[in-house]
Length: 260
Image (cartoon, rainbow, N blue to C red):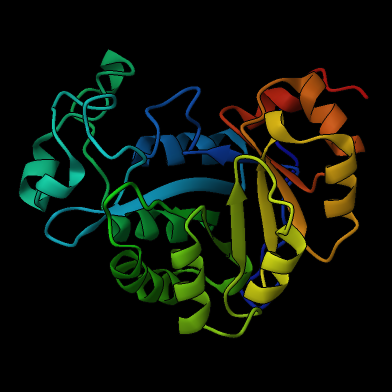
């Protein structure tokens, strides 16, 4: 079943969130955080995708989740120790399936070009792994994404307080830059933090979310996004709690048998 799309226009500053967006691209069916995963998400009917961005050792922003490359490539080592030339030698597809052999790590610039060509919405996590410089990452990413993606199709999110504060300091206008605060478990001061940052959305691990907190968030001025939702029954329950959008490895599956 196709995913119910929300219309996107370049002139609207407020994102039109879908009921579900594709986590790291269509990561149930293609290697995560790759160009192939984004193309697969678009082909499936997804209108928004969630991706992660980090810096290589030479300062190039790339679409990648882990601090190292072992899990999702044929290489080893840390991202911080790679330059672009070495990173581009890695096969980042075969670990998932042989049909994706020779898939290459996507730079942020390459991914933004594809996103714009497909007119997708982007929820981009500023991924600050241990020992990495949040401010340097923001400095490399923010100008690129704001130039490439209209405000109505962009959310920048992070677990890192430093990254979020730096993003807001660089772009104070909440209509020009929509910030999402990522939580594993909702903090007691989530409302205060969201107000201080002029945040747009709260992104919560659904496994750590209870009905009382979800309903309070849904009643607040902030959008409620839940990750990573792959069970239609969970999706249906979260919708009754006021969730605005689910982040899923396979968004289309959520609509197949979802009943309250």
